[in-house]
Image 1 (cartoon, protein in one colour):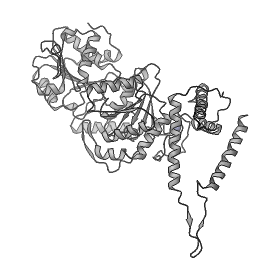
Image 2 (tube, rainbow, N blue to C red; image 1 turned 90 degrees about the vertical axis):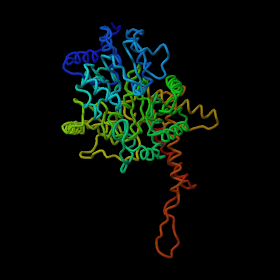
Image 3 (tube, rainbow, N blue to C red; image 1 turned 30 degrees about the vertical axis):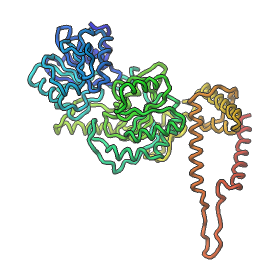
Length: 554
Ligand SMILES: [Zn+2]
């Protein structure tokens, strides 16, 4: 007997399985993040071993082997009945006589498949492992061994050839509604131009060619947008960034580090021990951003509150697996911020809108079913708010974030060169106490600067506040409050933006020269920025503006 009781999704799945158990040999259980997949496997396993039958559980990543074993034990399965099939298993862990065998798919492929099992469970079953698929085919056609696949994304086009029934106890959107998964807020600050990128084979089906993608995504403007947007809107939240390849990830990481944000790269090549250390640093907050290349999609349960998605994809599986990392609930977490810099949300839509009611296979009827599903989904594709880049659910007209009403008929093929504008603008988002906290911290920053001999003016403080909230700090106390990373990131973002603008202005400074008439001396028709005259003019303007604002405030 297990020491846990089934949750609603496990209960439904067990009932559905029971119902079909005698008529089918193989089942694919759709078990999204947060539905209790490993617990479900424990309940099924318990039912078998309590009658003296043998279960083989196969995991695709070695990191999942010991994790699964220790979860099984914590749920109440007998540790003396669990053995590991793994090249790196200790002597005490490997024992083929035990009723529950937890195997690494790669080890299993190199050895003889155990021939005494009664149930085969395949974890992450959407991954194509040829040897294992052959074994499923053999077991289901030649023996009475039952096969259960588990996946949070059972959308691979081959699954219907190997599994007879889809068991779908719940969905991501139901889990979010119930509070078992975190809600999310999508923003699409940039959308790269992917015209001409070729397709090639990948673990998750056909997808964009990685080398070409990396080249586009490593454009310094794109990466600059990623960093500056996070500084401005990321609220200093623990973040995972998904990148295309190692070169791209390194570039993004360096840019974050340059901006004073601790970021680290984790790839498939990062050794297990080092990964654990990095995850620890992430969980303690010493590392703010984990930059991932094809990892952190399985067996990673840390508290993630922001996702930077910079890896364009056409694969619904990859998309959901990555975004799923941010959907775990945690104390004090009310939402997960998702910054899509890849254009994927425009293409595939929200991850909780991607649903299938059947398993796909290679037959023509299935292609039709897939096409129909895609069509239905196209109607649900979210629209981008042209004002703040919030991704609005389909059919929503007024932006729930900033209140912007698009003009009738104006669609949202927005300018990709813009970045998110003032997410927190509008009173619906910021409370008075938030505004007071920001103002106090800005005043603290001003004191700090004065003490280092590089003062900033009162006008600078007023403008920084207004950039953030779209209004002046009327009625707020000047009492300083120690600065948090969120506010200091925001200030850093402003400084970087200013320096960038400065660079651009210098490039454009070559004066505009009009050649009025042949033979006449050339005349300057504009006052070049940066020259003494223009500096005096702009200083005067600023002074006047400030005086007006000061008047407004009293
Ligand atoms: Zn908006």
